[in-house]
Image (cartoon, rainbow, N blue to C red; front, side, top):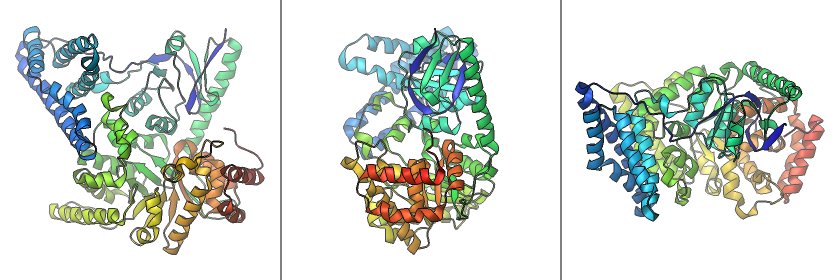
Length: 578
């Protein structure tokens, strides 16, 4: 009998196939014996891995202490104590020397024994098992010559099933032929969600009973209808097969389709792309897009669970610029909000802590100059490989821009002295996403080359308690439209381009409102790229100007939403399906 299980759509599409279950921290440890003569080299490799893990955690502790307090730093201290435990070193070395075990096997056995002892304890000691899991994962990562055993390993095209999935896991399984994702934990706006949509992988989350799904040899992941289908009949199988075929045809079309550069009445309009991983470029045709309006550089940190060094960043920025073949790429400096920082640190002990809410934006990087200096050096070195632009997130003070400019000049002098080539002049812009930024628009406009509006954070900072309970999307609030109008007006006086790069730009009704306010450049995720392009191709931009006054005068979010919906229907003749 056919059975359906409901979930929440993270990424659209449909997939049919077997499942692949992966549970993080259940490592398939390579257990091979070494030659006795190799024991000391193996121990040295283990000690090097301990040193690398200690250095990473020391850096993390410094960041936590600078921005929070000693109580939060103590969370890291527990893990540093484990890494510095002489008994741990002794026991692992003993396993290697006396039993000829490889270092990964020896370390895993010792930590697993510790972990079981703590799990059998009560109170504080039991809680420390979380520290051991974090330490175990971090050290094993550095011990691995080939880290494939730490990540899911598909043997055939299949649907990934797990309690959660990390960005690096997703990149790994995509290369192995994964056709979909099912998880217990995961949100639409999560980094994994963004990446799944970029890779066009169907994804459903909030599926609590994974065992029932895993008991079926083949399932249907129907993300479009937010359901998983088990026990298919032959008749149903034909229907889903056809839908899967149409989904694949659409994906192929997206690879070759070109985006429009003007509306149907001839008004120029640019649709750019948001990305966060270099791997995303493999899924697009660079000739089909006009440029990258937002490269989320902090995603490079999430991918590695650490802040990449200068060379790693340089390679990522260079490869992106070369792949785009002269089209502009806007690199946003690290924007560490709480969710991104937690994902980057990948520390289980931190996942439930709310004190990280205050971290974020360019201020974080200026407070940690060594991080920003490294990033700016990498950016400048890569700038000669294409049309590179730099953007500062969450700017709240004029001094933020001045400090970055001063740092750039210092780094340029250093690079010249070292004989390293870079582009001396490039566009520098800021993201307008807070009330403080709105209050200093004019002085900011005189210091930069472009504005970018982050509507997700702008709505969060401006709406607060004013969110309307009848609307799920708070960017329909009149305050947001008036703020964007102010940004556009200021930019026009200074002849600056304005790009909208938040979720609002890919909402069909909200996009009509943005166009009415004078927005002519947007940047969206790949999953929305072609739908947005089709809307621009069919919209009569000159007619939207009649909307602006009504949008700015309206006080009721629900009425404003209905106004935009009706205007869209009159222009397009239909309402898009969800």
